[in-house]
Length: 459
Image 1 (cartoon, rainbow, N blue to C red):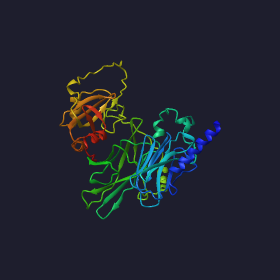
Image 2 (cartoon, helix red, strand yellow):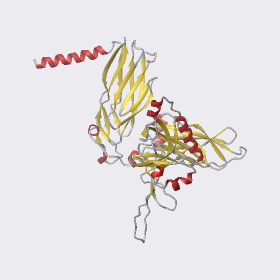
Image 3 (cartoon, rainbow, N blue to C red):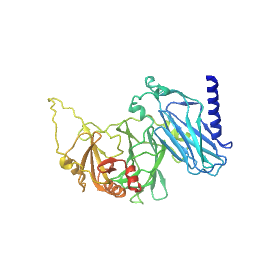
Image 4 (cartoon, rainbow, N blue to C red):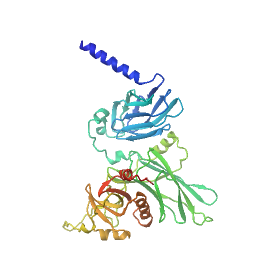
């Protein structure tokens, strides 16, 4: 009797799934049977939409250790957040057959087997219909390039809090390659193309290049970075890196005296965040063609560059320092923690106490914005420390999530704060300032503030 009930229940389940899809609607998920740990692979969705025309949605849960980026969304809105891929059409394209392509990257520490699960839903005849979808099984070949003790089965990886991988592993795929600058036209102008392979980095990053005297620089392609040229330095600054795994930025060098030929020697660095610390690698110059973005061509260029070495900042006077960046903040000058070895003398620890009460940030009513210019784990003498930057606004501080955060201004509109931030970039040496949002004195995200006040975001 029990077996009969279970059989009937299973039959009902099968019938319900079949009823949810129209006869002329189908969706298939194309994946490879085997992938390499540390590598990327493409997933292809093929939708035969039949007679449906309006809203449709595909959602897929990725196992921990996989990340996604869109390749061809086919007019859909593609997002990847909290290990969920969401592909949404408010109105499906007119074509009967629709293909969506996205790319997954596998953490280099993984091995084992997994499949990709998701569901597709759509509206037909004012009725919502959906079906669960599972891909064929995918096998991960373990990497031979890392310590075997770091490798873990992907199924076990889902049940554990992974040990933070060393910086050398997380950042080993990061590359920054400059194509040998090429002359354009007859006015001794140069185009400079730079390829960024971002690896596992997502947040704050910066390209900085020293430009020879006699040239000025103008942006060509910035990939949504903030571009500045000041004191013979070109800078591309991202609060969040582009979604693409690799991309090219470019700028143009223009000789001030157009009739005079100049010898062009460039030197630059790429800075990014790993494990809450800033890492810096040199930009490598090569005889390559970055106008050809074919994946095979780019893979070959990246493979031709050795693993980078990571440098730490050394302050003036030979005092080594380690800089830290707040994980929840994408910018702001970092106040360094300095270490100095004292030889031949007994080391005495003294604690300097600064009276911060006159400088503490007071809450204001409603939603407002400030521009954060620095953050550090220890308090500083505000009057003395920020005097060097000649900031016209009064600097205030607050304690937030274990940090002393320093900010200026109070702006009711995001655009006003944004404009003041840009002005700081141009008139001071603080080029990492960013906008922070508050609601009745409590920190909120800028996105929340914009939603509350119905304001528009502007870059």
